[in-house]
Length: 389
Ligand SMILES: [Zn+2]
Image 1: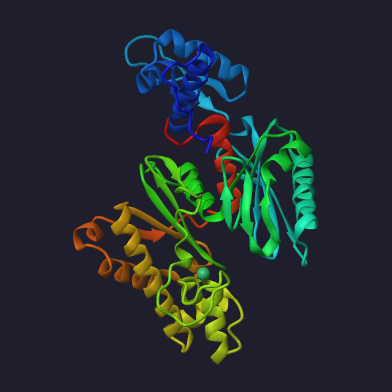
Image 2: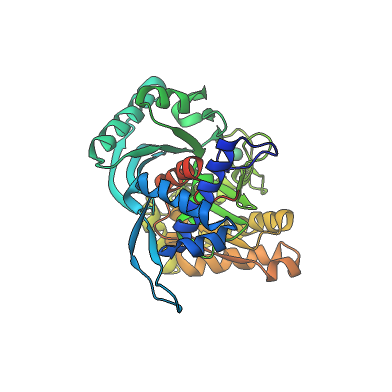
């Protein structure tokens, strides 16, 4: 991922400048309003460098002077604020059944959103729908556009913007990023939906930002986005966190071809399908959740069983990674705290007690979605806002 600014050992003057510029911008982003002296203290750069770099950021419209702060004896410092609308970003969610997009500012505030049903489109037609969404959202932006972030289910090579495999769209080895980049002449990044969700939490919703974080997305499918040392961890083949296809002992065949994947019992779609076999009125996540909350069978047993299997998988992640912050996002959050407690209990029983005790498992931010996460990835690629250097 070209997200994190890493300063090479023999950096050119320009690389050093870009690196320092991102340090200053990140300090303004996280500590706004702040002063030049505070930024110097936070970044370790000299006052002269900071003044020079802040001047550039003011010219770029990303930082502005907002009056004087309180004096600590001498002259009151001029305060600097990050400008949320200094750039706008387009975030897309290429979900199953529906493509949606949002125009967001650099604080993750959604200014406009659009949804388009996929209506059986796949291949080239689905790609055309991506272009339509970009055009429509772009027409609404009054600010300079930073670029387009795209989140999609499946295996995504973020380094080249290639969708390696997205079954529902009939896309295989599609160079989505470069295609959208060429057509719209904007920077583009592509990530999978769970990884996007993890970036949204890290960038917009978690303060202080954790160093390490697991975000498990439970909706139509199940996947985890893993942040290690403030970097998106993708593994050797971009499939890190694909826990939805780890077998958990069931007998149902999964869309991936294997039998007994976690998704077949614990994804929201599977829980709805299983409950509907006995009670056809359970047709969506809301109905499943209200039946579960009302202790009505079979929804209660099915959701509880799904929660227990999910908890086991999370216990496995805790044991493998010892990451102490785990968040669950997606439609499963409709099931509420009672269901979350089942997941927590099961995860505790499936990991070393000493590790489990220090780990919190909670729901993520209710506004976390793929569009925001994809936007966050683009912001990090272009401005280095929240990932580590
Ligand atoms: Zn599977």
